[in-house]
Length: 121
Length: 115
Image (cartoon, rainbow over all chains, first blue to last red; front, side):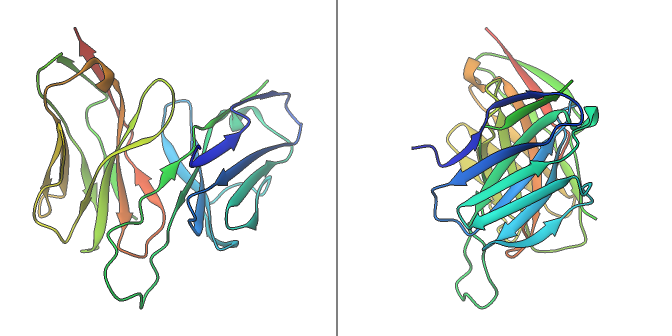
């Protein structure tokens, strides 16, 4: 079973359309992320959710709206697509370490999905 | 804000030889994690190796090892006995502390392996 799965793998659409990318993880993690990889391969975080609560929102246009129905799912909806939105979008998940958990947990590794290549024409 | 710099856009290595990929980072924190991720043509991001800043010992994973120089803020990846399957884009990444969330990535280094 794939640990972090994204659908679709490829998405080709016209400017102005609205589209969604879905992500699911079966690792039992409580934190999920969306990263964007641009045409120069540069990776940058967009959003992060912990237990369905938004914890990171990195200067992303409000046309992008993440939704986390439960801690195993994090979807990304994009309104009014623009040419500059063309990129590969990666979902990732990890288990958050919380203050007061005592023993230091050398984990917090982020596991990535296979990416969704979005092409806006 | 933390930054991660990979100064080598592209590297080549002969099969079975050793290659070192460079990474430097900038942070004012003392507690953080550093990672190397591999992205082959399949696009999948694969964790190669992880280093915790509070550990002085360099991490190793089979043919992969790091040279972590905390004072110099340097974190290089050494690949020994290079194989054709090592050809990929390699990303260095930084995560703040035990409770930090986001990964800050470098620009990546393309590694080509010659047979």
